[in-house]
View 1 (cartoon, one colour):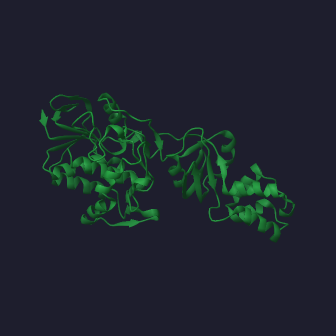
View 2: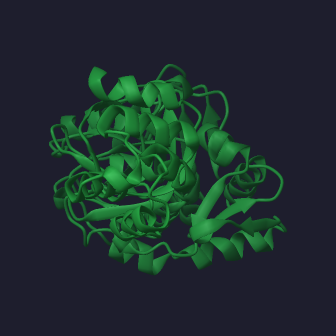
View 3: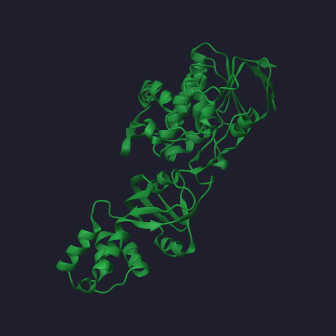
Amino acid sequence: MNTFDVIIIGAGAAGLMCAQEAGKRGRRVVVLDHATKAGAKILISGGGRCNFTNLNAGPEAFVSGNPHFAKSALKRYTQFDFIDMVQRHGIAYHERRWGQLFCDTSARQIVDMLLDEGQAHGMDLRLGHRVTDIVQGESFRVETDHGTFTAPSVVLATGGLAIPRMGATGFALDTARRFGLAVTETRPALVPLRFAARDLAILSGLTGISLEAVVTCGKRSFREALLFTHRGLSGPAILQISSYWRPGEAITVNLLPDHDAAAVLAERKLSRPKAELRTILAELLPTRLAHALAEAHLPNPVMAHLTNAVLAQAAALLNAWRLVPVGDEGYTIAEVMAGGVDTAGLSSKTMEARAVPGLYVIGEAVDVTGWLGGYNFQWAWSSGWVAGQAV
């Protein structure tokens, strides 16, 4: 039997961060993972360069049933703390749009950094160990296909349901339920959206077109790149809004975020009365998109013959194109899972389950989901860090 102070299940971002911090406090830590390599999702993130945090990572960039829950962890271990560690290890990085930070070379550098830090502080990493049971007595007993491990503290850091091809499972959620913790509704997030045949007839013909747009659902809007695909809409703008969208709701797409379309069209009617509407639209949008919108939604006489009602309809289409998704592409494509272990049952300061002393839940398995752009990694670092101070 292997006896430790802390058993961390999951050798991903949150688990490895927790391990190094617990080790710094002199805790004997073992990390168990059914995978054969650590940090698998880190390695594929950011196109292989790992968007490891965001300069703007604050609590407003996270979706949760309790919007205040993430504040404590994010304040105690900030993006700048993680950047300090990256710099200490000599990892070159660069900033992209909206404060996103990426490795210059490879995501492998982030994984190696985490492994080096953990092993420097005594982390015992056991890969290829599948957990088969967890029982709580005087200590926790964790059964695996390679033997039994015991410790007074267990940390669930196995992530969520997104990207099952990378080994994602519902282990943390199922284990939390077994110990009496509530789990909120889970769903794919940061995921492309699908549309009904009527809309898809237009969208699929525009595959490959990308432009900057503002996408809105309810009170939330994002200005990012919008990508037309053969199955619907994708790109950062759609991935962002997908975390807020619910089935049956509409989204609106502003294709001309820097222009008042009504004013532009009114001016063109005066200055270019003989031009066709689709010609004018093609000066504002990619040609294929302009022609498709005109053909599907608008008459195409010359500008001089357009009524004010038609101009208003065209302007609304450009600045507030209303679409109703019928679904999303699911966990296979989603970058993360939204929902998870209910924060009401966890301490925001330590990530410990209130009703199960010694049991901690961190990272994606918790009902805290960040925006696209390094925010979910920051939640992994912050939640892993605070748990590492407590276990």
